[in-house]
Length: 86
Image (cartoon, rainbow, N blue to C red; front, side, top):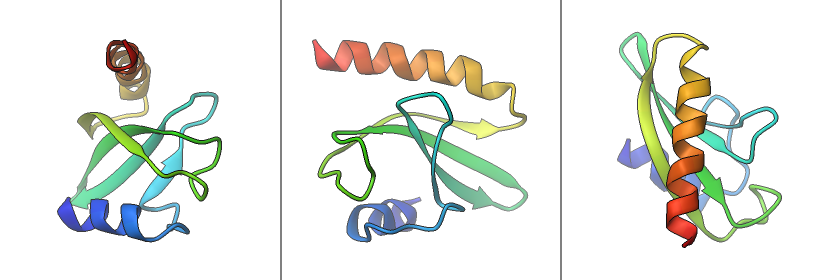
């Protein structure tokens, strides 16, 4: 996990296997494979583009079991981000 965060913060062009923009949201996901599981950390950035961003706010993490997990986690990330901005 530490290695993935280090890559994400030091390299502006990151493989989509590691960092991916979530469709129709303002969030990105940091994907870390552990054995046969994916651990996902949702985050937000301070720009419209990952390449142009200077700040990353890690919001919430979960173990991906199915694509159904995303709706609940996106709702949670929105709530966390709203609280953070106050």
